[in-house]
Length: 191
Image (cartoon, rainbow, N blue to C red):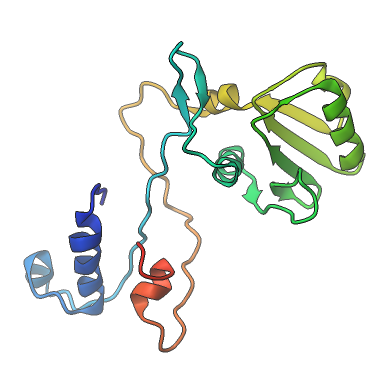
């Protein structure tokens, strides 16, 4: 199902919950003699990551705070979002020694050199920034990408079907005894 608006919280989620709990006695539930069971996932769409400025140039949407931006870029690049409390440049990882750093800054040659030294020869770092100056190829342990360009390259243009791949979703946590199902599924009163 895809729904927009407040009726998702006021009508859709409660109805799905009644169907799962076996308390719905109308519509398709009645026709199929459904007795309950199953589950559902509830996702909210984030705002568009990029938007065009008044000159038609693609820029990062101001609705994204630094954490949202880092998490979105990690997902796009196939990294697990796991920001380090100690290392400002570790926003996520794809392996034990491959990391990602996301910033809206323009990085200069000295900043890239300092990053390369701190990362060291045993690790690699994907640096996603608004822009950079200098030759990033001189650092064997860094890969540098410009955020607007890298995001646009991942976009799918002119498709008839933009199906959401939901084959391997992570398992939802099992509710603890005594915790209402709604709270366990959604982490509180919000959907």
